[in-house]
Image 1: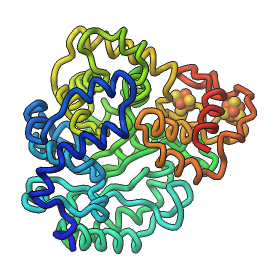
Image 2 (image 1 turned 120 degrees about the horizontal axis):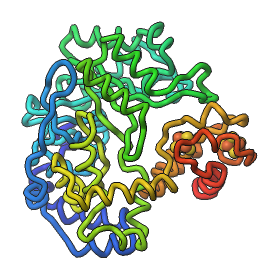
Image 3 (image 1 turned 90 degrees about the vertical axis):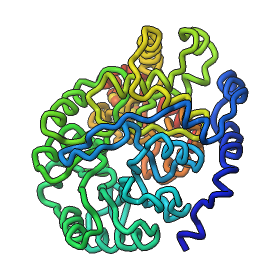
Amino acid sequence: MTDKKSIKRREFLKLSSTAMVAGLAGGLTGNAQEESAARSYTIEEAARKVGQLPRTKLGCSGREVSIIVGSGDLAAAPREAGILCGMNYWHKANQWIRSGTPDSILKNREGHYCQVTVDRVGGDHHGGRIDEEEHYAWVKEVLKRTGLGYFDDMQLHYGYHSREELKQERGFVRAFERLKKEGLVKHLCLSQHSYSGNARVPDGESAAEVLTAVVEDGIHEHAQFMYSYGGDPEMDEFVEFARKKGFGTIAMKTARGIGRIRDDPVFMEKLPAGESPHNALVRWLTTKTGLDAVVMRVKNLNEFVESFSGAGKELRASDTKAIRMMTEQADRTACRLCAKCQPHCPQQVPIAEILRFERYAMDDHDWGKARKLYAELDRKGDACVQCETCIPFCPQALSIPEKIAAAHTLLR
Ligand code: SF4
Ligand code: SF4
């Protein structure tokens, strides 16, 4: 079954051009699209342009992983180019249930670290529960369907609601330990969102609070969390703490506001000649932060080359200028999802969630995902009464009520 679904060699050869056309149609607009349309890469050419990705030691096990982490939902062409560049850690490898596990990974299983990302059961990440038996059974089922044999990492998706939940609710850890004894998983990790002030999670706490407790707990080996350019002292402090403790860190949701920046011809015109926001960002993330690795979404080979050719390369003066300009622009337009505003909304509007979905639409151009997730919210942007109580708590001083109203119009 898996083999039938897997990408065969003859299909592999067709992927470059297909992926390029699909990516361009769905991704870029205006000048950026015209600029990208002028280029076309085969998988091998794209890999040559990017070169070998540097590797980094992830967490206390010291496993060497590519500084750019792949994902199970990465399109086939950039995925294959990534493998040629030494991309060897695959977040959400369980997604290959749908598309088929790539032959290139199955044939060199020991050369890759594949992660299973496990959701709560009986509801979403707010109301769902941690359930030892169900997690245990689900991971076994996914192993059967992906044909991977074992998962290197078992990740609790969205993480714990609070330090108390981490302490009291050990069902996920127990499921991991049982699977580990059977040789089916090896390392425990999590991705962590912020639940502070979240109306659907009583006593929820911030990502930094929970993650600090996770490190002190000593069972999980590494974590994924939201991190982007611009000042975030709380997460910077956590990253430094994690580094000292030998706890691995992987940044996600890194490209705050970059999609809309690229779509803004006036802004792009002002950037230093030859600068690309994604490339400057990858240089910054991989050389100027204490992070071990980074997840960044790319849709096609052009975006792959543009972004990942910056991996591990020092910032040039023009990159530093670009990052400064991008920060000023994004601080005015794109939420960093820190959720600091959240506990202060008397109407319990899920501000950070709504603005996360807005980012999927405006930056990733993934309108289907954004609208689907927005439709699932039980409290939407029209619950905002424009009281402005939240604004003083936003480190970016965003006009939150205006943004919430605009997001509601876009996504409802
Ligand atoms: S302006 Fe809207 S989102 Fe902000 S605190 Fe008031 S009701 Fe909540
Ligand atoms: S609106 Fe401001 S405070 Fe709220 S999550 Fe976004 S950046 Fe943070």
